Length: 346
Image 1 (cartoon, rainbow, N blue to C red):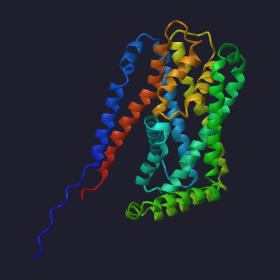
Image 2 (spheres, rainbow, N blue to C red; image 1 turned 45 degrees about the vertical axis):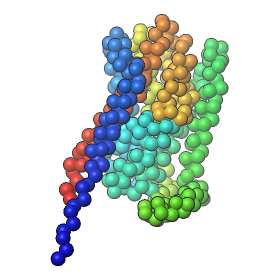
Image 3 (cartoon, rainbow, N blue to C red; image 1 turned 120 degrees about the horizontal axis):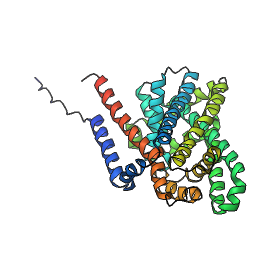
């Protein structure tokens, strides 16, 4: 009679993931000294304008979730607004903590796979979401450059090359990601990945990588076929991304007003913020850290003239970066806990 084999201890990956997330946020605060000083600065600013900045950020997340919801439903994928907003915030969170914002879409696809949505199909939808946002981003930034070119060329011509390079790179990203919906291009990419997978035969066999790539390509192609009949959803995605981008760029204006300034109008501050974003968004550091702060100092120096430029950088980064990282981390932890409780014990 065979002896019953002892049960292997199940590794609590969910709990380890939660601990790692909390640890990352704690380290994030420790190694960013200005994070602690920002609270003192905020208490001395006009609270009404700061409240508007927070409200605008919330509306921005509604747009983020709304566009995802629109594109998902256009492919007959059932999803509620709350779920789409969660996926949107998770994507922004992982984009902010990974180099060159590379972690957002993969983690969103992983969360959607947990909800039984095929990886190829969800990736196609998320890439289209990124495509829509980039179209709005580049369109608004080009208009901003035209609007401010005379002022910048007179007062701050040194930033023009950075703006031009940023517009070229972000414009190129539209062409690159748009080309993925061309079957020959996607096929070439998948063949290259399969070629790489064959170089690691044991790893490839263990995770069934070749079969997974074929399945991914088939699901992605199914979206491409449907997309030809549902272009209206993509057009609406681009149109909705324009006010979403403007809202994101508007946060700086209300921080500007919270410091007591009013010498520049709303559209001028939104325009200069969009050009700053275009200039640093492709930097390889998580959240473009370092480049954002340096860029802010160069782009906004003519606007914060009362020896408060550094304080303005801290407050701006708190509302546009640190606050999102904290909210994203809390959401990730809460979602992981709820998901773990919903799974049947084995």
